[in-house]
Length: 324
Length: 237
Image (cartoon, rainbow over all chains, first blue to last red; front, side, top):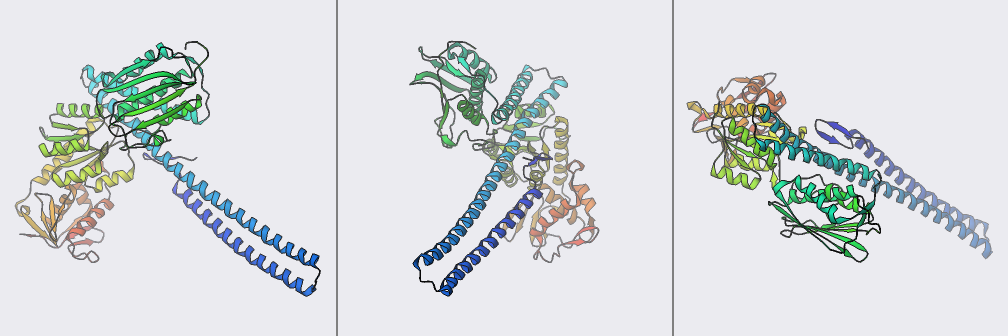
């Protein structure tokens, strides 16, 4: 896909290319119509000529008459198949073009959102750095700098992970014992958000280790937490994490106390799908879903206004007891 | 310059908003910070700002709509848009909505400060009206109140942007004499806004919609080929 970058705006399908595609599509439709009409005329003529020949030969032999009829039917049938094929291919091309256009628009919105997500912490970092350079020595400025650099790092990580996953990049699956590992990971995730985030974790005593890529699970948790902090509209955001064995799966439930959203759960986590407002790039929850599927698991999201956001992550249990 | 001016900063990104507000306070301004469109409305009702720095992307609306509301509620307030999407279409839309300036993120604080000071200076110049332009001035079919940044056309009130006011005042100050495009650009725009002669023409089109009885044959604001524009009538009421 060609990308054209100019003065901060992105045009995935440049105007000249779009005009060319529209011209070619119009020519194709005209060709199909002309061919179709010509073919119909040809078939009608041939069928009439066969009938006239049949009458001229005056054959009363039923076998010969049946052969004439069969020939006429074959010509009409072949023509009908040809026309249907032509129409089917045209419809397929139109659908492919529509799908590509929709994807291009989503890509354009995605790149605009990524630009926004990179420029915003950069703006903040520049403001803090300029203040420090002019002699402001407040610790608060350093704290904001750290927060903004984490945000920038996270955005870059997500974008790279998206490119890697979409490119079929491999995962390093191993046995991950959630007990212990989860505490260490959550401490790292929580540190980036300071007092704006509170965790409550409950793990079943009989919890088996899971078969997963530890780095991928870390990214999943980080994306869920960032999603909560961004959309909760309250502070501190309280997150409850519970993990238990459920049949032949291990179920990790994530639930925040945020504002929730009216967007149906099945629409959350769509590629480049973004909720109300302008915040976010729409890849955080998509990555959660994609990474879970790549690890043989499943991610389901639930939310309603006033009821917070909930995610159910189903992992495959591991038979090994190894620790990452 | 403009020390103590009341500013309203509307920015939903906490770190950006707080640091910006702190730095503007250090520069001598009185600053109210609002993190959403709803809070901004409350803020300007409580304390009308002389200038507002508006982020275009807000969680509960967009800065363009908010600017329209602010323009109607506090006509004398200057507006500077802040945006992380620096595409030309958005910039044009912002300026057409009457923004006095448009700053792309990331920006240098000193640059923003300079633009704020320039905007406040222009707003101050606009506030200092010559005697003949105080009260209501009839220009074509519009009754223009430069002090309130408004125009009444056929019984309906229209809020005028600072630039519309500046252009109209310049023309009204020289009724019957041509004013060049360059002079209009020089008086109503700052060099860092990258205006062109076309920008002036767009503003004239908008002003004609207010003052001309017949848009197809403009006679109140006449084009002087190769020079600029001429206002044919303005009468103090």
